[in-house]
Length: 195
Image (cartoon, rainbow, N blue to C red; front, top):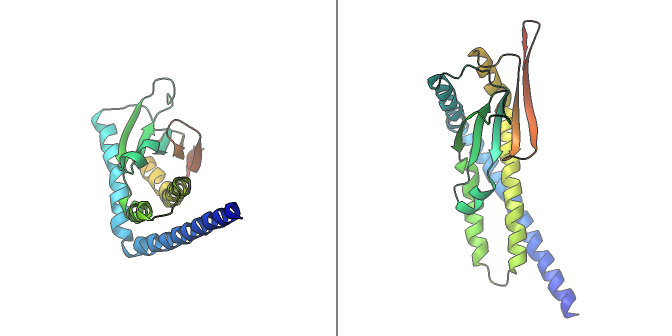
């Protein structure tokens, strides 16, 4: 009987955290709509900085990949950063890149507060907290992915307007040096641009 009681207790704790995550997502959405212009300007500024670096380094090759990469260690180092990067067609061969780090703190601040509260809860088994933290991280990455997906075509269009894309460019999101999800594709077909 005692084992069942513990298991039921742990399920209640997990259900509590799931409700908290849902509440956080609603807060993030509200925060985004209230500060949308500021948030978008800050995000786009990161790409303008990368474009400026491409020009300053006189990189002649076209950009073939725009990536937003999850940096797994950033959660543990508390920088909560993603790596934004431009790559040419020699992506894997020469590892030529222009990159910067971007921290969407407007999202993470809610999860950070929850983490601090979660650690202070007595009777929360360590494995439950670790599972909760993993869930938080996954939700965080998913929200960032959705945000980037909404902006991907605009970023690719900007690169095309500046003649930094030759034929095709992919906007990718995923784990650093791992599989990535294509959020948008921009290609030139017979003189026409398709984003």
